[in-house]
Length: 286
Image (cartoon, rainbow, N blue to C red; front, side, top):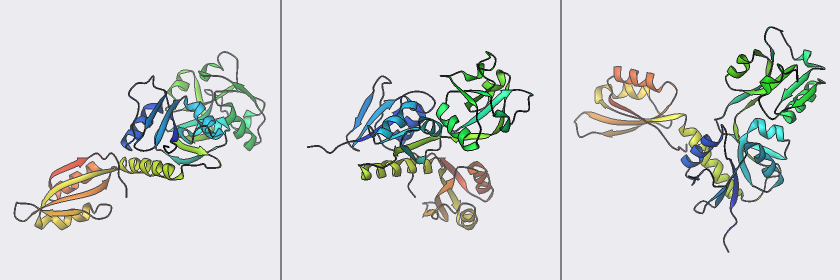
């Protein structure tokens, strides 16, 4: 009898879908090639993937129908499902903000008694309760930026990336963010079975996230300049230094932070390094 599979929910469309697929692929898991596929089994890793609406994933995981899932933190909180965040995944970042007609100097305190249109009624109601504010929540399925112009609401609360859509509708954001969201891995609030498989999934996802923050840097350098370049790029656990066939020259390899990597290349070149290469990493375990 075969071992039970770890059931993993993945967004089937929207802003999180493609990035989730790319991350899972980089982590070594099979992923669907046909967007119409609803499930996919990866027998090598003991995982079965279910492709679902991002808003439904927390509900399925919270009920225990699925073991873990990838969704947005905002959608997890909005669902009020009995699921918990395991780890942030570093993509799909957004802010949940209040917005109102431009030029009205709106404040959080001034929301009392107002009509607030939103597609995230659960998340908004929790926030208002925490702030002790009584307001009328107007649930909408989307395009909440039109609610004020149509006379449905006085204020809106919506997920914001750049804020361009709100500004085009004549609105401006106010107050602190209600929620800072990103893609997250979630599981049932009481945990569950498949601990070893879940641990493996987390390790693989973390290895992809680490890789996204580093480059592998290779360069050649003469003996006289070697020490200066090692001081500029010491690497994470120290560089690898190998002798070249060219007498008095060395090949150096080091793991370097992605941020500032091109400035580092400039400094290494000035210090005498040549043949400097930066290589993308798919996964990295430190």
